[in-house]
Image (tube, rainbow, N blue to C red):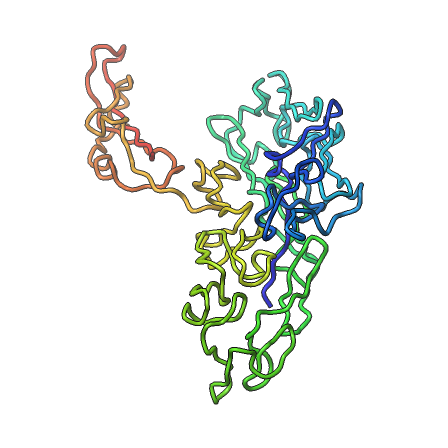
Length: 439
């Protein structure tokens, strides 16, 4: 069985939120109750987004919320440490209110964590405050721990946090939010994952649905547990020339015939949602992810099967978080918020630049030495006579990498070009140096 989930992202709905007076409450999602009726043909026509407290639906041609959670219920997976508390209002909306006890946690010993009117605030400690693993370092007054010579002086690492020491300053690298670390209970649609701030919490896991053992159902993770939905008509099941029809295993489904050996094969012109092998099998001409789809559905994070989207088989829709329909996201990447996580336009986790490095494939660049001047314009650094032996001529090695491919985020490389006599130096000798940066 293939598994997925129905995860709702609360923060993305802020673009369509309604601020409710001086109390600081914010309703997440489009407020159908307070707007003129919105006409529709299907749920995707309705503005806004689904929330953890209700799903958009098209009922009798008008947009509405269904699967509404009771008032006061707290959605699973809401962000922590953001000075906000999210609850359901009983009408399908998620309501965010200031929560002074949800203090921000940046993992730094050199900041004081505060909530001010529902907004996280990090206040740097003075530069006399001790910090580091053994309190042997000192805060720099800018919110960072300084004075390190190696990462182990900065603090303990964990599955969601790594340390580095760069130019004497302790730097944290957080594992991207949603990265699953462990799955302690099989079949509960929940796994332990990083929250993007170095902490370990729980999220819905689309790969952890409970398998009912029925070949004619798709086991799908939702925000309430596992749903067993009918598999697409034509799905093979037990027995020779048997397939699923409306969730029941029996003779070949309508539009399919026995190949005379063991399989049910399509006779072509299948309706939307039926099993297919290639485009000519479908009335629409689009066979996507093994079902007849209502469109080409070729976007990276678009899917056409219920296990990937939560929508009926054959309806092209954005993929639910944690899925990768058709393997269109690169490598082990998955869809988050309707985009491949490594293409979300945000420098997060341990990315060296936006969407480069960390758990994402590094972006390609070129080596540039001494800026645009190249290796032929070394910088001179004054030194004594003893530097003659410590400053070999590596100019050839520099020219070998100039303009060659590299990956953004690689450490800079330094080359020496021998010594020269320079009257401007107190000790007369200067070492020629060339620095190459990947960009």
